[in-house]
Length: 214
Image (cartoon, rainbow, N blue to C red; front, side, top):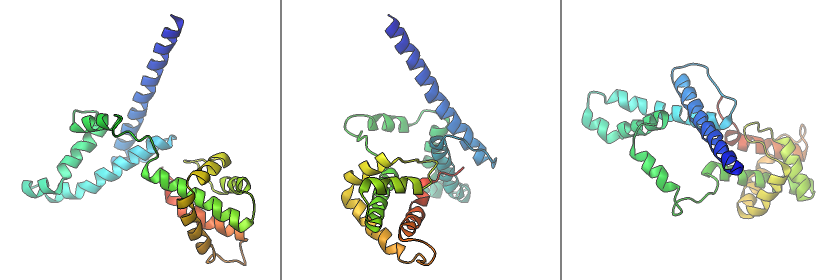
């Protein structure tokens, strides 16, 4: 009986946390859309809210341009896009929810990383390989150096994660490693050491994938 009570309590806490997550996203979205300098400490909240703001701002020109030409407005897709954004920021009824529910079924639920998360993983792994080759050290040491050398508050990584990513993404990592090694040649050798140059090009390449607007 106590276990069931504890489970129900945990479910309530989890549901409240999910609701707060959505509330934080919507509040940040509305604030930034209104031009207010709002932000949030949770990078996941910022990632969703700022993405929605960018989408809303992207369709605004079409909504304004064709406001007096219904046929042209229809064919831009801006109205249906605006409907999706509205659903995501209000919870109102929309076919989108059926689509999301379908994506959670076994047929469509891959459970793997998103496109940019996967790219980030592969680039980090490539950076480990490039550092390892340049410094002539063991992979665990290269992983530790890359983990310490790349500052990513929104996406912190450990040496253990880097070693795992490198082992699991060897082919893609090798491609990125070759790019980093080639790019490092253009970094001034009289100012930076070989390993510093690898980290510099790695930071530049990964920058857009490691920072969420604030």
